[in-house]
Image (tube, rainbow, N blue to C red; front, side, top):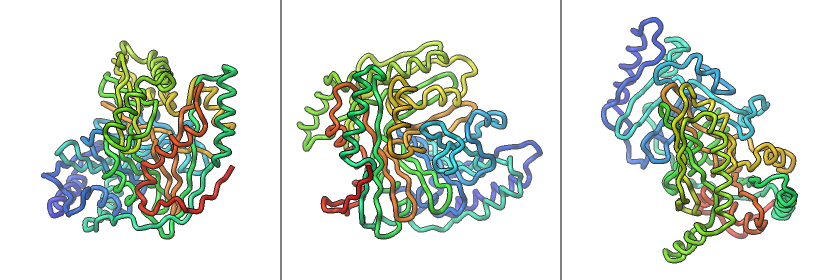
Length: 443
């Protein structure tokens, strides 16, 4: 930690000497700045910091890792942020599933912020960056609050006391059948229905404990944690990118169509081959492709789509995926793409308006940040993941979320099992999960 503390002291001196009009300073760090025997000391350092809001982000390929601390300016939508953004400044945050910005519960509304400080790893290169919109003295005070000596995040020890599903299994069957009736009546082609599962523990479990355990188990995923205060956090490990923009280059994807993993290698291969040939799942994926193409067409000069699906194998499930790339028209910013793409047919349905209305009318809970988008915008680039395989954590309760795409031919029981498999991305991290747990269901 000596080099890290030395870099922090140097940064504070640079802030004091910064000329009028300077809005961002970046201090390079030599080698790995965070020491310790922990698998990922970055999460340990993040967890120790007393500054809120605080956000942890790791890109899906593991190339970039960021801790963003404190807020200088907040936004309910990232579009107005471009008025103050300069150079490589990034606005971080989460857009709610329905884009809502005026919910009385902050953890359900869209929330974006310009942080005081970012600890950034890009490949093997580390740096500290500060924004100075709040004034030099304010930023220095924040830096002086940071904890340099910290302990590794301990393994999960909390035991599960109860599990509650919303809706119940019976309620889910009714919900899916209602959706199938609307699909049969040609009111919509697809709707993605979700379940909220509330897990109560016998002792408090921290968001950092859950995230760190998930990061070690769930590969090929974006890992994120956004804490508004010491009691409330939203976290997840999602395989799905909403989009990535670098200059005028756009990357997005259709990730839809799901089956579980096999009991052995041969069984796993058979399931994967079946998924790649199954008409229902291929149609579900095509709906997402068509929806994305329609939404990005006004903003692109050219678009390329994979001719065939590829298979994404995760710890608990396998997905169908098609890459979509394009060249953006000049002056298309990340916020425009966020508004255009979210929510895609992969998390809402098709047509969007009809599917969203069905969800609003019939799902017995509010999604909030679940199935929304978490990431950042900046002048040169932007990236958002889709906030799936995610959960809210508050004291001794963890609210888990997962969903399934309902199309013609969907079976309620099979879709319930699919939700179980997706939810196990996080739920399986708790070794106490047993079949004899008391389950309290809410219709």
